[in-house]
Length: 397
Image (cartoon, rainbow, N blue to C red; front, side, top):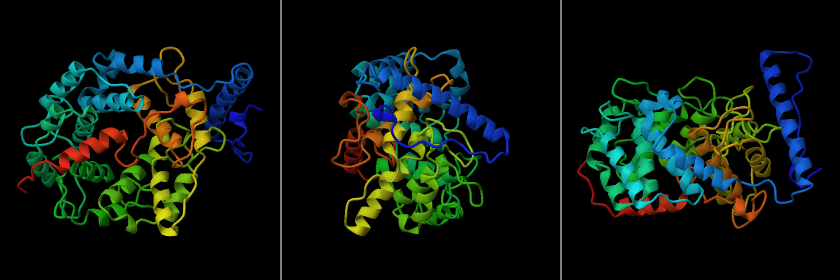
């Protein structure tokens, strides 16, 4: 057995009860098993594998940075997200846009900023918290004076206040839904741009903690099923609100650890769902924070709380699109810029899972730049942005 697949792996036992869910799971396992077998055969001849096909992924991202194929038309109202996903992927791969390319992205995001505050999904639409988060993250990743100065912090604060509800939750837009994503997006942009106030987030932590379920994860609203994306948003929001003490971290740890698939090595987003590459970030981002909390409580180093090697193996062996770059959900799926961003983000977390120790599967050339598990911004870009806005002029609240 190749050294990279010596971790015990366990297939689904459907206990002789066949369902649509169990059929789909078995099909995925069979496909991945064939890929693992092929990898082991190749590894006997090439000890350098698995290899992160860095140049292929960089070329894929460059190709999609300013020109998108027709199948992205459905994301026309989410264009700041496209900027963010591509900029984050570039940063993790230690690749930088040219000065002209940075200005082009900034010029577009200027057109998405609404005169009343916040950013829209595209020019001439209403401001919305999700593209506001994406646009500000993208500007922080670009990291130039031109990018930082785009953000109208005073209007941004007014925009956030306009979405706040009396119970501490937030609406995604003026006529929109209220869920845990909104609190996370609001808290993130407020912390990034240094406009956070206790008044803005009064009662928010109490509302977020109501979204933690009996399972330990977080749902989008109080009383609904725990989900990986909402769990990330809920837990990270509590951290940004400096209220993580309110969270039942033991039950959260149990829930998220059980979302790592025992055969594939990647994560599922919910109970009885299939593995998906994007949850390499959404689920794995919880672990470094909980590890840090446990270390501070027990005054000693804590090892990785999940199998970071198995996760890297899933990404490197199963989630790289071999034809022209980009990262994927699972074998058989095409690449897209969303999965490219979040698979790389999760891979970075796994590679840096244990401080001061090499956690990299494959050769050292596979290593990505370090990622922040709360903001999902490459750490050098994040530190630079936080320092810039800490020194910025105080706004009038």
